[in-house]
Image 1 (spheres, helix red, strand yellow):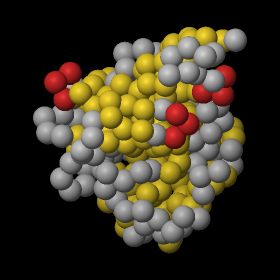
Image 2 (cartoon, helix red, strand yellow):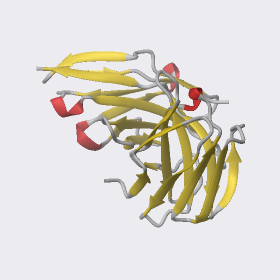
Image 3 (cartoon, chains in turn red, orange):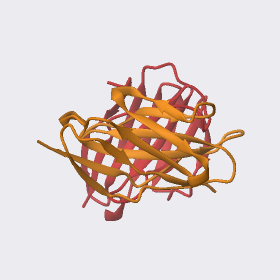
Amino acid sequence: ETGVTQTPRHLVMGMTNKKSLKCEQHLGHNAMYWYKQSAKKPLELMFVYNFKEQTENNSVPSRFSPECPNSSHLFLHLHTLQPEDSALYLCASSPERGSQETQYFGPGTRLLVL
Amino acid sequence: AQSVTQPDIHITVSEGASLELRCNYSYGATPYLFWYVQSPGQGLQLLLKYFSGDTLVQGIKGFEAEFKRSQSSFNLRKPSVHWSDAAEYFCAVGRSGGYQKVTFGTGTKLQVIP
């Protein structure tokens, strides 16, 4: 148990659906991250939030829309996804935003787009 | 930009045998280096990290890693593997000086046989 929870753990959606992934951290951290994990590929950083402000968007398609209402919660809103978006989506948090910081990961949401 | 290579996609070792997982990075200055482990159905958990100082770093679960600047390597070792060590291991590198994102390798999947 890392102190970072993600819901749902599994999600199947059609290409026309709208769904949201939720992440919550109980560690008092100020930075939160969304990653995409696909088989045989490195973890892809999608978004970074620091003190609720988005500080990084790594050229993520607009069909992924993040939201960070406070430092403890992070959402990823999904809309008109493609089958190639099927992957494990990991949320992480760290005390501060910095490349020396240890990141604490949630268990992920396994997404399947049909 | 920095990069990290884990040349071994899959490794099988016998329980009780020693283990070494390879990691090579590309970055001009002194990097921040990390090893994370991901057990099935879990997020990533930090095993150890190197920022500066002693090049031999001790981590959790009996793991250690050695930073070798001349070889641009940060290999992970364990003298005696336990069946519970079966997991996927990720090396990551971050750039020193200000905020820079951490880059992860593609991972090495470890199988432990009796």
